Length: 557
Image 1 (spheres, one colour):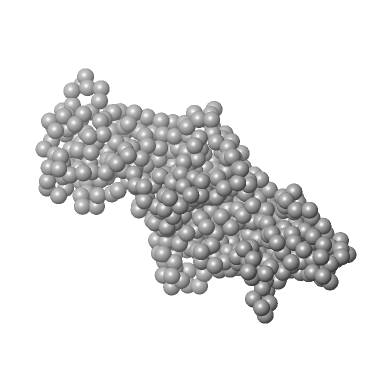
Image 2 (cartoon, rainbow, N blue to C red):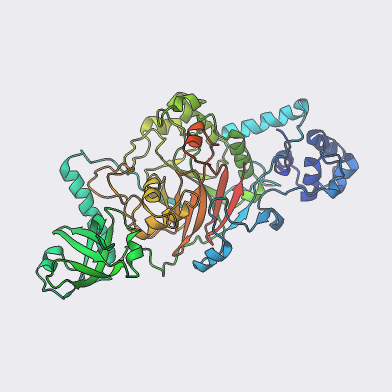
């Protein structure tokens, strides 16, 4: 295999049964011809040597950097995460969130690191590299484990624990009664979370109360409009009827009206007008994540990679970045990484947007999934994989999305991945990860003011979904919602981690102690995205330490 980076050198040494000092690995990688340098070093290293050292390399070859200067004068990046010098405390390229802002929210700033950096100025000779490349390709094809000596230590399956909840069987028929059922279920589930905070009365009871009485209700937002004087009139609906609630423009809570979406469930309290026909709102409540939420953590040091939007089949799919990612998974830096969670859009799909056929590398949807399955084989065999669909995948667009059908499951069976619906809650060693592809983020961003929700900071609209305890609150807009007997999109329990994708931007933060991550994509900008002014964040891999919920970001572009 090509040996342009220290990671590739370390992998090749481990494959041949050698352990090595980091400096020795760096010297070989920085040589003008790393493959020849490695071969000469292994030919001359003493038989009794248990570890390859920098002196062994220096004795075997005249090591020069690819710029022609002595390696000792050149700083070469170590593999991602192996050294504090490879890390950066700068915020994500898309969050715009500073460390102080994260701390202000009651969290520590996530740690961001750079991943494997290819040195494109040098290439290994084809003759010397062919055998190594064939061996690595065989490993990728079988998911085989590499030697723990200098590489990844295989996971202990007896210690792994994963449970997936969210794969639904569609029961809705599209009848009017189905729509009534799903909204009634939404109301009942979310009203339970709000009734402990207000002295709730149903709408018909409030209508019979005398003017000037204090009153409170829990309702679904059916209308929002401003009055001629600039106040806000919010119509709330419960199972008995509707009631108008007036939020005065000079009240502190007036700003909260800007965060409201139709069809979400809220609670209000206040005072009835003299004629009893309207409620003047004093307080407004969202279902919310409790500020006292104490997230669960794993009992051992173990990590999960959270990615989304791979888009295999697109001409802009970043295959080289994917290979760098899976190569890294075989290194010692990924020793604790035992789970890979993919939040939808495994493939580019067909007919998703106008002119897409001009931007496809693979035009058959089944062949796209076959290629994706081949890419999954590059992931170490001991890594547990969970996948949910997205809007580019070959499932229905309406949410909740059922998991892939049996034909697609059989195509993607290479790594024995767990496949569930969108959304799903994945409990990984006691940590609840809510996985949602994220189509509703388009609607949240379109409806709410920029300070609350933008594409450049995708974790912020995700905060809004957590506040509303629903992944797709608004019906009838850009997000297609299926009329099921039950509303599967309600967050009945508080997740420890909220993972989404869809918008192709990287963003992360914590909301009331819920680690919130939008993981970017693996597809460079398409012509369609350029026309839509979408500038994607490509080939980032957020890595979560499940025992601490600390976060590090690897960049494989």
